Length: 249
Image (cartoon, rainbow, N blue to C red; front, top):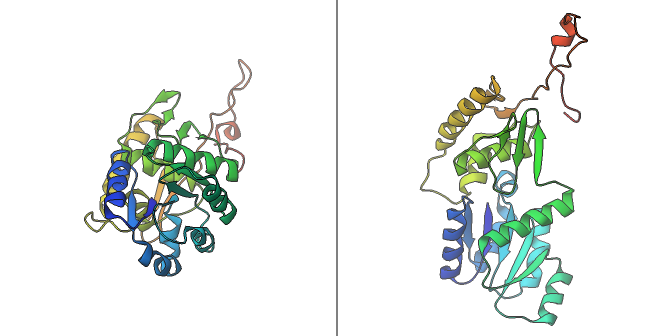
């Protein structure tokens, strides 16, 4: 989810609509409310935020410090005009990028991804078992073939991979995909998306890679790699049929 801070509702609303068309949840916050909100928002909600987009507001230089006390998400500032002095001041204050308006939301998302890769040494994709999951909007590949997914299901799969090895709740998934301020969508819609995603993955993989436990949430299970074939003419032993796991799990 992208949090947009700007004094003008027309700006936050415009960017929110553009992000929604790209399948990205967003929320606009008035600067007068942001200072109080960033200090009180829950840990689960703060983890769902992918980036902060700071527009027109006073004392923008103070925002990076407030945000860094709660979140490691990229902080990007939008400027109305070119100003070298202002840009240098913003970078000195700790922002991750400064963009001149107008700027397309796809460029903003690309810059968020680039900032994350630099800070976390992350690639634009991750191979998990027989799946290759991309974080740049492309559909995943399963067993070497593209698996077309609706944007919500694709985002959920990306979220599972980004949190592999951890059990995540329905609320965390909902906040990441729909946004923590979306009161018009029922949280239970997540279960429908996950159910459809599991069926498609099971059809391609031959098994369901998503484990679910009531009250505990969901977890992407360790995915097996293909067993190594024995020499020609030698039968497989019981141990050779056992599943092997990728390193790092």
